[in-house]
Length: 249
Image (cartoon, rainbow, N blue to C red; front, side, top):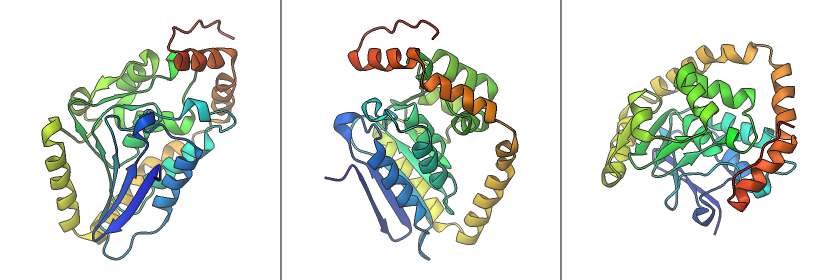
């Protein structure tokens, strides 16, 4: 069975993360398939896209066992495809969205989450740091105070709290999640398609100014963190389910 399944039916493009036994952790194959699913232009009848996930977790982020040699580019390329897709993209988040899973949800235009879901970036707990591309999305949707809390502490926040802060658009009790998501998708399907496309491009253009800020030194800094001894220790500790012993090297 494919780890990523996607199809177009009528007004909706549906993409399913289908690796529940690994909490839908993303490997290179999944990143490439996700990017391809959003690289194909929408058909005339399409009005929106939705990302769903199988199993109890939405996405645990990048598969730590598949991380070696991957770098930041594959996940950034995939997220860019989703963010710049011409029509609104909705994430239906039934469970935890952590690290790359958090970024995957927040790169969608609307997030409909279960009140049982949690969102977070645990990078500081395993000796990593977000790239410029990933951090600017957090700042864009969460603001500086919540971004600091998410990054510096690394502990996940409940969906209800992020809804209160305006980081995600909808939250529903677990039993009402599908009805809430359906109502959002039905509204998008009945709205004017040219309006949706124009609004999507307008918002993307207005947010693009952050890309022009010089950040080559930040890229070098986060890359050095990614290859540090602490990162190796943090990842090993997470996989071995033990506390990490960081040395600042």
